[in-house]
Image 1 (cartoon, helix red, strand yellow):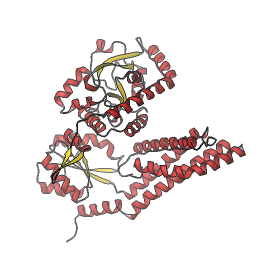
Image 2 (cartoon, one colour):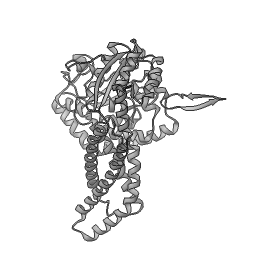
Image 3 (cartoon, helix red, strand yellow):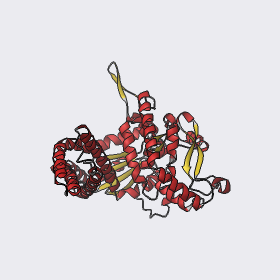
Image 4 (cartoon, one colour):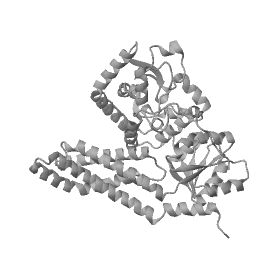
Length: 474
């Protein structure tokens, strides 16, 4: 029997992802990154100390002693950050992981220099070296990202939903990201149709997006069917699904069970997190104090009123506190225009305020809240008392995000939009709480930097109405 096109597609994708070429490509990336990293540091030493022969010789010799240790840590960091996994990544992901990699390398290099007392090479060249290494790392990673698209064939996405409306909603969410991820939209199917037709569509696709509204029984059947054909599955999780993200296995006689503990941080985690919050907030407030002053002056010159704005918010255990921000709207905006969700063309927002919101600089005064203990650097976004009760009534498990302190930044702020659906924000928040670690906080803080570059942070489904809409049913 001649194999159908779906079976042929399956074999092509699997062969490419698991081929010798794919493995060699990853090894090539690691070797290239190690060479470029060391070359970047050597170039920095040469440029910085080329006019002082004695210092250059000493610095170069010390770096050669350092490079073997640094190379070992670099391989560990590449693996930890998943930098060889180019499958379905975009340029923003590459730049973010490159920044985190260089940060860890620089900290490691400084630690080696400190403990071995090799100060001449890293005294001044470390900052310049970090910029050079970051540049070559980003360029090399972006080049490999483009090359990976030859190895990893273009995907074909199928949406499985409970209704046409559900499929349309998912399509509006994913369509803006498909091109970046090297995926074509194949179409959608509704699960109340003939299961044989659904199976045929799955065979013709390479990746499946499964809606959270599909029943657990249907999900289980789909997971098994897709797993047997090595399909890539994207699942929109429900709250109950998130509880399984981190568990202990407890065995009763010959019956294994998953122990799902309550959300929240341990005492040791809270102490470590609070210590970091105090030290980090003090450091930022001291270093950025000139910027605080400049922003305050600009806000006052742009419109009448105080530079700072306060608003009641809710943090851990439902505690109400006053959050401080730089004022981005006209004075007494809510009293004059009403209290409603802000939009990009909101007439209440001032000229300076628009810039502050888009770069998130309006939130800098919240480091004072962190220092006082009302907030943490990383955590769920704080809500207003007037809205949180409505969310709790309509979104199951929404109150679970109050198990930790509200944060200045967090997973929802990194991966979501300004007006993301509260249910989507809850998903990020629960994922963060369940998988909390100090390293996770550091990673989120580093990723926050990219959100400070101006972009359309308001873009969500309701803003997609003017897009060309072409969903298709298979």
